[in-house]
Length: 389
Image 1: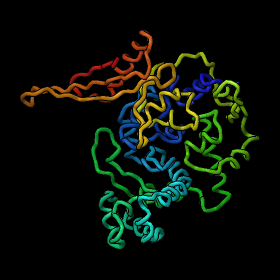
Image 2 (image 1 turned 90 degrees about the vertical axis):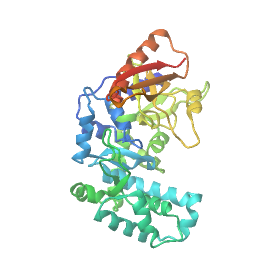
Image 3 (image 1 turned 120 degrees about the horizontal axis):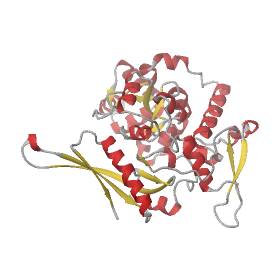
Image 4 (image 1 turned 30 degrees about the horizontal axis):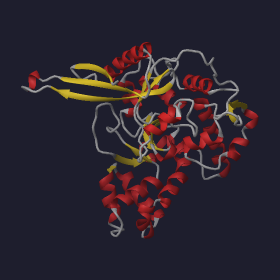
């Protein structure tokens, strides 16, 4: 019978948040089955919090040699994944993304006048010729469908095709407009070597493999947890077929008198002692640590989660204290006035607690924040940490 604290320590161990790993960046990204990367800077901090000695050049190098890339996969959101994983993860995400566009009432008018298969073929051919900005792709597709909003057409192409956001966007401190190409144009050798997921047996095996890898990075977990993380539905049959390779554990009921929840796990996956210390960690916005389960009480109290919810689904950058989300953080930059040569930039990281923290934990939070602000704003002339009371 595992309580939330035991589940928390199991999750932190698998996420390399108890003890940082020394593994190279591509191997860590592979183990985590990707890191969310809507904001290009997010995976840099996510890896810095998990990999000992990580530098921004480590991830830049992997992006430039195309060992890793940024593509919409789980939950239709942009993730940093390995090139080897991208074809399978993108194929599994495709039905989810198509379902989302057909269910979007705001785009119903455009759907009524668009042949999606024809649009996908046209968009793919155009993007294979050269990477295109979102606005350029939209304008090109609008030539054939002038009655539809161009932005809707670009969204349809993104849902129908595995599209990569190409560099220099995604590199550290490199600003660039979102620019797309097809996965097979960006990493042709990897795409050719990928399994043919049009075959039902191959698709089933690929789904099983992803479920097992999810458990290795996020378990123990329920079927609902796997579906919340992936966006896929109907995984009960897949998970049931894996039971002879898994162990079953029971989670303490969420409410007194309730029934224990059944969770599944890999037999040899780490499940540390619940009392093992968990250091303070600063995580980026949208970190999968607290988005990868249907029930998230192993990392955040329900009251805090409801407080942080926003209508557009944004999640703030979080501070883990004793392994749980107990604060948020943000960085502001200020510049002094005067001649250009004498101007100084100060980066201030503000920590906002979600609950009162003991003095010792506040000190640990401030110390971790001081390290983080120097990493995130290494180009600033001065750094400061503010603890908002």
